Amino acid sequence: MQQSTSTAPRGHAPASAGRPNGRKIKGAVSWTLLTLYGILSLYPLYWLFISSFKTTGEFFNRPFALPETWMFENFSNAWMGSNIGRAFGNSLITSLGSLALTLFIAMLASFIIARFQFRFKAMILTFFVIGMLIPIHSTLVPLFIMMKEISMLNTYWALIFPYTAFALPTAIFILTAFLSSVPKELEEAAFMDGSGLWGIFFRIMIPISLPAISTVVILSFLNSWNDFSFALVLITSAGLKTLPLAISNFADGYTTDYGLTLAAMTMAVVPTIFMYLIFQEQVMKGMTAGAVKG
Image (cartoon, rainbow, N blue to C red; front, side, top):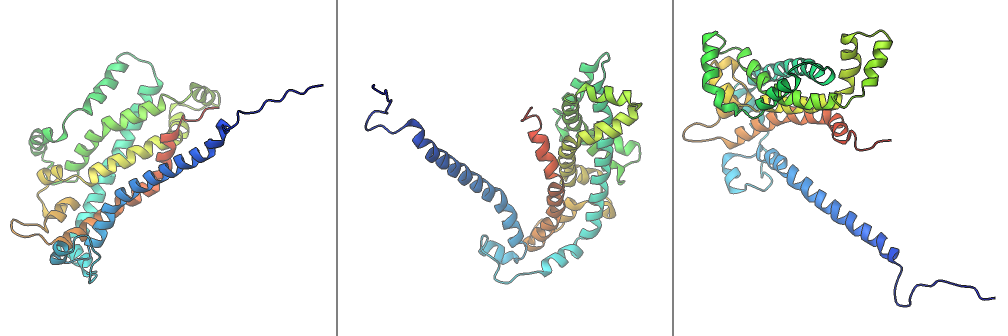
C-alpha cells in the first residue's frame, strides 16, 4: 500500500524559514531609527546643559566640547544677577493660575458640549475651533488697549486672562473629543445610583478624562511658561517680570553673557521636564486609548 507524501521541491526552502530573520532585521532597523531619533531629541538638552558651565569665550571657541573648567558659579550668578528667583515665582503664578482656570472652564464646557443635546451645539463647538485659528500675536495691540482701559496692566491677571483665553480652544477641542467617546451607560448607571450632574462630573468624568487632562496640562503650561511677547507688552514693572523677560536681560545691545544666559535657560527648562515626567504616563494612555478593543 503506497503512502502519499508531500515534499517541498528540491532546492527551495520553506517560505516560513526566512520570516524570523526578517523580523529580527525589521526590529533592529526600528530600534536603530528610534535610538537615532532619541539622540537627536535629547542632544539639544545635553548641549544646553554643558554650555551652561562655560564662559562666553569658551562657548565660541569650543561650542560642542565639554568645559575645560566647570563654571558652577554661572548658576548662582544667573540666579542673583537678573532677579531670576523673583521671575521664577512670577512665571509659576501666571502659568499655574492660567492652567487652573483653563482646566476648570474647559472641563465644564466640554462636559456640556459632549454629553448634552441642545440647539446651536455644533455652532458653539465650531466657535471654539475657530479660536484655534486666530494668530495670537495679532491681538497684542487691541489687548494692550483693553488692559490699559480697565487698569489691569502690570498685574498677574494681565497675563493669566490672555493665557487662559488662548488655551481654551485647544483644551475644549481635546476634552470634548475625549468625553464624546465615554459610553452613555456610565451616566445612566450613576443616575440609577442617585448621583446628580455634579456627582457624575466630579466622580466619573474627571477621573476618566485624566489622559486628556494631562495633555491639556502639558500644552497649556508650556505655552504660558515660555511666553515672551505678552509678558513684554503687558508687564513693565520689574517686580512682575516673568522668566523669559529676566533671561533676556543678560543680553544688551552690545554683548551677551552666554554662560549666564544658558545657565538661566537650563533652570527654566527644569520645570517643563518635571511637568512632562509627572504626566507622561497619562499622556501615553491617552494616545493609546481605543487602540485595543475587546
